[in-house]
Length: 181
Image (cartoon, rainbow, N blue to C red):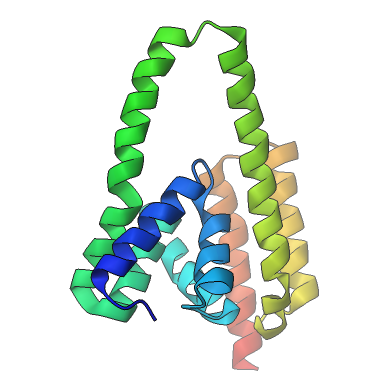
């Protein structure tokens, strides 16, 4: 458990800086493996809640974790940690990008960062795979839904809203049906 709201601010600031461009995989590593503030199961539960709420998942997760440990003060501390320093960095990088965007090295570096962020998300999903044992859908069906989502998004290029409403609704209905049995 974090000792104070200040500890939450520092932890989420460092977390945000480590995961620049892909904070969620780093959040799992820091909150579960390094600091041991949450178990894997707790992390998955809080992440599921964060994904349902409007706004960026990791920002919602920061609010939920902060609130869990230190109430409203903790929620604002974690949120500030997640946003203040990264926002200042993004503003500085945007100014630099505007000046140097035409350089091939800059364009190549940005493409490389995108690949790294995708790899981090895949690695995080792989680490959290064991938590599917407790999922009402069961591991095979959950993996099938993930595969369908990837095909719909990456191959068929369906809009995100359609995929979330379609496959998300089917997933929720199947989970509710299985839980009712």
